[in-house]
Length: 491
Ligand code: ADP
Image (cartoon, protein in one colour):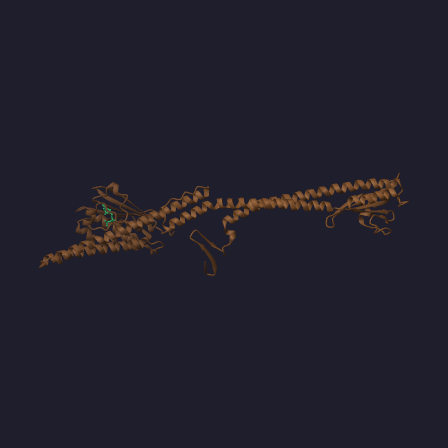
């Protein structure tokens, strides 16, 4: 365990790293667990509450109806027995006491003047009762109400005079709902217990389920960790869900691309080393053979030193080409884009190369179909065209020709470099833009190439969002066409 920038971090050998300060809600396993638990708890609790509510409503309604029936029976007896003339009637008073005992409540009888003539609790006898329900009942209407807070139901029933519908008194029965409350309490306790047990079972299921859900993700993570730690080049196959399958495929694609890059970088480094070593070896052989001999004639010295100088030039050319290529390869390289007259630029390039062409008796002809002005990086563009024209001269026959033409439409300008040279075999045409690729190594070496010229040309064209193509027939000649937008479009 160690502290990093104020965080407590627990490390348990490689596999899991848990940061205590990490928000647990961001943990997918925890979220799945929570969702499953809530999916169980919310409907379970809602069902329990619903059941209790339905029970309570029904129990109160039944109890109210029951009391109302009892009250109607007693009030009828009161009318027939003229209870208000003589409130000491044994029969009725014992009915009232019985009602009180059975329903654990209180019964009061109120006369027409709102005086309490009978109270089974004996508290309010002789007093007046002007409660709303009593007054409403005095008008002939039975009432009932449920006081949930104080746990009782109050029922009023009118006592009507026989023969008329005149209300001569009111019977008020207040009965306790404690037994209903007890049942509700039992329901809650038992229901809560069942829900609790279900939640424990659900928690176990939720832990297993959450683990199953995130397992494919853990598989992907550990596979990626293995790859980044260099333990494996394995392809990922996590097909549990469509999503993980898609992720696996994307990762495999990315890894394939990285591997390709890595391979090409390795190949590049090995090619570079090889190419740089070749002139070195030649120089070493030449120098050693001079050193091993005694009394070497001056002519031999001059000849060997000339060869060494040639090798140094070659080494120099390889390094210069490599630097141009690496500079061009760099992502986010800055281009020095300017609006240039392409006709003039081509003339300048050809002017520089004419002496080389003359050495080989190669004629260079330039043909412009129209004046062209375009947005280009002069250095990179010149490098591309120089390499193409240089090749057209190098790989030409004696007294051959190189034809350079320039044309444009409203969007692009086109440069064609045609030669009457040795041509490129069809099977090699797909590879000539690769670094260090040469069609005929010994011949190319004799001619003096590095195998980087076309790679540089292609890169230079691509950074201008252009394209380059080759058409060639062996022994007849080669044509390179370059297409570049007139207006540079930065990506
Ligand atoms: P190099 O430095 O060898 O010229 P490049 O990358 O410029 O390297 O060219 C790659 C190979 O393509 C050359 O070695 C050569 O075999 C072939 N090539 C390029 N341009 C021409 C051409 N105009 N005519 C015939 N072969 C060509």
